[in-house]
Image (tube, rainbow, N blue to C red; front, side):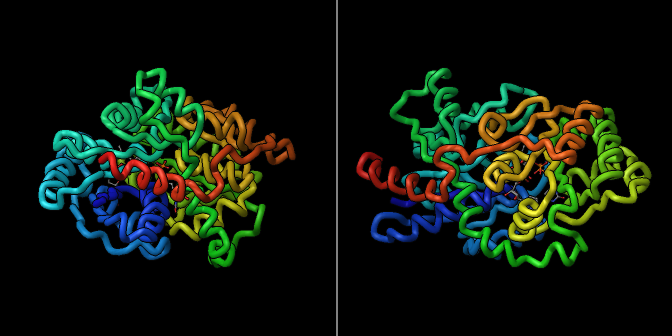
Length: 367
Ligand code: UD1
Ligand code: UDP
């Protein structure tokens, strides 16, 4: 069974790595082929993850780069169609909800190649979020839908997806976390940045709804301004966010904060270490809501909705929206010792890739 696995953007690498590793254990059964669309291309958004996660060089690099949604999606579609035509795989496996995910799924389904979607069924119910459209479309055309949580199964069933296509396997991102947390423990990042365990807050932001609009971004920055008077904040900055600070002319506002420090995006091991040792995490990332839940670190999600409600219902995540006062109050509450207790969701146990590959093996004869 020839399987093309697709990666494109930062959150894809830690999801594909354990699946590829597991597939390679069964060379008689599976012939995996790795395609990197090149949606993310900076060394610190791409190459560093190949090195740290032990991912092999991709079999094909499409080099699509950045662009508008239409341009980027179209470029991936044109380049990936050629790969499919040349390689004739039995299955295309995509993860997550980025533009590369939907583009490659559309290509495959039009060529009658089955698609497996890992992390299916997540819904924010916010159609202004580009990822929500990617999720809806990818799930609607996928043949096998691997889910991380039971609410995702329910979402899919409500949308009319037949039960036989849905397979709850747990969270493959946590497979990587479990595999690499020991190595992350010895990362020197705290010393490098002069940080004490528990003595800082970790920040990431990159959602267009937060950083592409002046009003929302300014409000968030003002909230950080208040929080950093009590807790130093470290902010590995996403390239979109860096670009928007310059475009919106917000440099002087962020520079005025003595205890808010920007650093370039960091590698996976350093980032795991930064999360684990943080007093709290402020983020709009999808994956970081999940990782903080597993690490038991308080997480404040600066969004009005989440496609990962389990991290709020079961985990340490709190959805605090974009209101400055609300963000500051929630952070101060944590600093005052009022932490929300959390548990690890079902199936987030480091064995999701095993279950995915077992299921693919069972379906092998049917493809
Ligand atoms: C993308 C995904 C988002 C995911 C995020 C993870 C879509 C629609 N969005 O958002 O779901 O959460 O990745 O990080 O697929 N840029 C660089 N270097 C890079 C990559 C991007 O400078 O290596 C800059 C470019 O100016 C680019 C901008 O960042 O225009 C946005 O990149 P893009 O891939 O379009 O979206 P992200 O915001 O990264
Ligand atoms: N991450 C990282 N370095 C960083 C920021 C994030 O290694 O500077 C990792 C993080 O641990 C998680 C993934 O990147 O595994 C999340 O990606 P991102 O926030 O870019 O995307 P999202 O999950 O929001 O789609």
